[in-house]
Structures are given as structure tokens and as C-alpha cells.
Length: 278
Image (cartoon, rainbow, N blue to C red; front, side, top):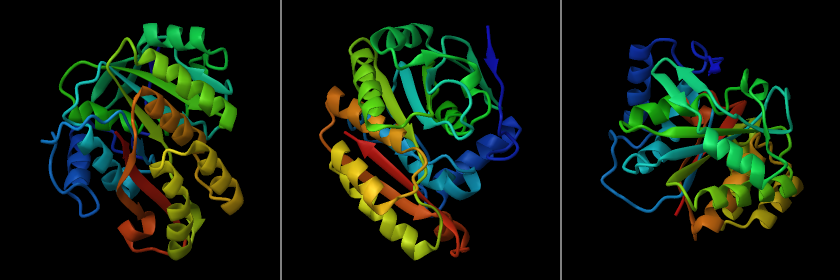
């Protein structure tokens, strides 16, 4: 069995189990987090979420809002879609089998779901190498391991190709998998990169609006017109499409903040949003 070992433990989040658990709990209690510990008392029918993927010290509290929202669910499968920052491997890649290892243990890849999505859509290839270096999916997994005590599997999908057509294909394929499994979809993306704080807020507000409306056409128009530097735009779009086809009717912004809001250094920031689809 292939083991996807941590690529960013010790950088984006701690190396040890104890420190990782402690850091995640701090994110939940943080002023920019939900300010309470999981599980949520609300059992709203949430189908998917958008989460940031920077280092926990920057984006962890914002991500914790999404994880708090889904913490009372009991999915069999969590599908995590993220951008391939390294540009290695296939244009769109799931993993056929194996486990993802973090300081909190191993999570199994759902081999049946991987084979199914590959069969449904020929744009999704099955490739281990594509996943070996990137952080966009990896940083989501310790959060999942911490909020869920039950056994669940993951289907990681990493994107070089984040085009509109590919997002439609991926989202539609995910919705077909949801007919046979209880799933949650996670779209992993940060928003505006390395602009001053005020400008980042303005840019991201313009892009979040069509996400909440679940309007993918408008989302891509705003993305291109305003040149919003959201790194995982295809992951966001794929998640929107999947959730809409599964039955979500609205997006809700739970929390938005920038790295500057969190750290106080506002000259060059990255934007983060926690959004849920229900």
C-alpha cells in the first residue's frame, strides 16, 4: 500500500501529534475561529465547504469555522479538491489507493470512489506522484482527523487544470458518487495573494458574492475581470457545482479574514474565507 507521507508537517502545522492537536484546538478557540470546541450542536444539512490552506498560524482559525460547521456530520467519504501549486504530475489527479499520513495517524483513500470517478470522467486520472509535494489537501486532513472520531475515507483530487469546463466535469462526477455514499466536499483555496489589506478585502468580497449565489458563470467572470489571485479557483468552482447538483441551494459566508487581520502585518496579505453550502 502506498503511503503519502507529510510534505509540510513542521512548516504549515506541527510535526508531533500533541502539538498538532493543541494547535488545532487553539484555532477553534481563536478570536477569528468559532470560539468554541466541536462538535457543533447544529446538524444543518451541509454538503460542502470552502477552506483556506495556509499555515495554521495564519489561516487555521478561519478554516476552523468550516470544520466546526461540519463537525456533527458523519460522512463516509470526504472529497477534498485543491490546486496543485507545484505543477507536477497530471492535470487533474485523484489517488487510486493508499493512505495519507499525518501526525494524527493515517486516513485511507477510498479506492472504490477513485475508480468510480475515473470511470465517470476521463479528465480525472489516477496518479500518486501528483499529490506528493503539495499542501493544499494535506493541511485539511489533520482538521478532519481531529473533529471526527468515526472512521471515514478521503478522495483527494488535485488540479493543475482549473478551467471552467474541467470544474464542471469534476463537480458533476462528484455529484454522481454522492448517490451511493454519504459525502462532504471540501474546496481548498486561499483568496487574494500579497496585496495590501484593504485591497484584498475589496477583491475577495467581489469574488465571494457569486460563490454565495452558487453562480459559477459569474464566478469565472469576476475572477477574470477583477484578476483576483485566488489560487484554488477551480477547486472552489468544482465544489460549488458538486454541491449544487447534490442539492445545495445557498452558500453562507461564515468567516472572512486576511493574514493581516490575524497577525497585524497588513502591507502584504493573503485572504481566507470559510464558506458552507447547504
